[in-house]
Image 1: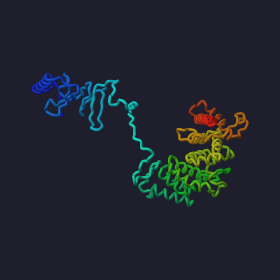
Image 2: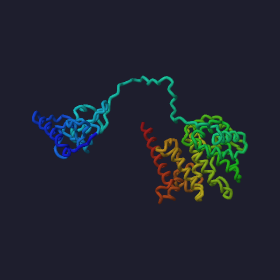
Image 3: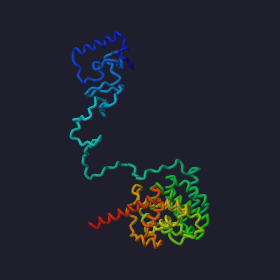
Image 4: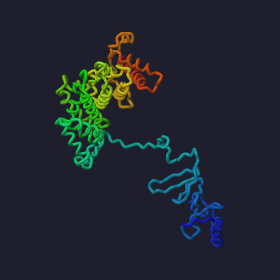
Length: 423
């Protein structure tokens, strides 16, 4: 392709162009709808041309010359800024003209237009359901979980399978727990952990052993409980299929009673080690264990059935014990985790909370709550306010957000109740 400036053309070629221009001008005035590629529409002066052949009549300006009518834009032409450009999506042909701001396209008159979007009425199909093609894959809302290339090969997959077997047999439990906790973050392995009933049962028993509620639990018991709770929490976090497996096992699990427990798992699974649950001299490791148990519970109660059972077992009062049971700094991480459990599951719509399920109980008067600190459940709002007042200078503190959302939900409950009474 040759790019030439008109002034640099050879004399004989320049003369030929001049003859053509004069001839066309003399014979007729050019129509404004003529293509910009026509030499007759070329402006005078220093204009850069594009010539694909030796015929000067087929040359056209590199910079598109707009008029008040649409003209075809060639692929290798440059477009000035601010033109009205349209494209035929069928042929790919591009046209441009001088832009007129308030111009109305007659072809669009009568059509409903919203900014740049044209609404096209769809033909009514009635109640006839759409046909699903034969052999179409089953729709999975949670998406497909990809299997590793060889999950049973030596290495990660082999160690995983071995750890499952070891844990179920009760041999070398600590090493197996460490492996499972480390790999449970993976969606595939998290699902595989929860698919096996015996593994899930063993994890629940280790995480909720009665020994952790004893006066002075051993470091081994606390360590195993922490790893088991971490594994369960990680396996169901952002893993709907794994949580569905826990739901499938739950009717049998909740009736289980672990060897060292005096209560079934339906109760033990939701118990919390609060700051006041045992004498001060035996609480050293409790905050760390409380935090991972709260994290596991937060993941489990994303399931509707488990969440309702948690509420029925007085779970919110146990959470309040963690929130206000201690002013010691070592309990702050567990208290923060507790606040986010409540926000994410019951108070914050943006986090997928089940609004309206809690709070629902009637509250005692503030004066009575001040005189009776033991009235935890009946004084949830009073305790939350007292906690938020401690940190009111820090508007971003989790306690301030918790109390604010709690007030919003109370207000929404009152509005809904008033609406029902007016009906």
